[in-house]
Image (cartoon, one colour):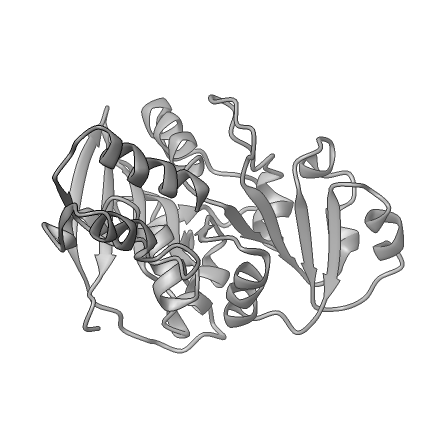
Length: 278
């Protein structure tokens, strides 16, 4: 708020007589205060110029403060036939290096990252941003049956904030909670409850990186704003695991538009936004 007051008073001191504002800050604490200051001191203010385009510059922030919820993006790497892993319990490498670099940049734009138990067991990911130093890296969230699954995994070997969202209590809960960067929370976790946790913690954006079952649940509950997929020119076929698949989740069709295609070497990055009226 103080920063906005300095900008407003600085504009007046510089002799600026007219200010054009694309969008008023949706945060309730500051919304309209800078504009009111300028108007009160004789500066002509025009608001709403290119408002839709300006709103696209920071959709995560806007969503959080206008709809009181985080922006949710599902991200996956898949083959041409929509598969994300073969039928084995080992990780299938699909994307190329260019896609890896782009996905690392993508992580820097989110407050929280989410994976499930199968992804933790098979991929054992660090869930970190390794190409860019960040003062406040994304918080890591993992949906688990019990916290015991997380023991001896890579995401417990550093100090990045980590939340283990468990459906059942375990003897390992107390031990893991003693780690300064780890929070073990036991509840009947659903996508809606994860989203509410984001609201409570002030996390404006959530990147759901896997696995297929969790992403299917987010789709079933209609809690998706954006889809990003890195598609590799390969096929797996057979019984390989498809993206956003679950025997438990029911079919729920979501409509997307604003499709963007980006070439990343031999891979293609597909980005789509949820239809506003969907």
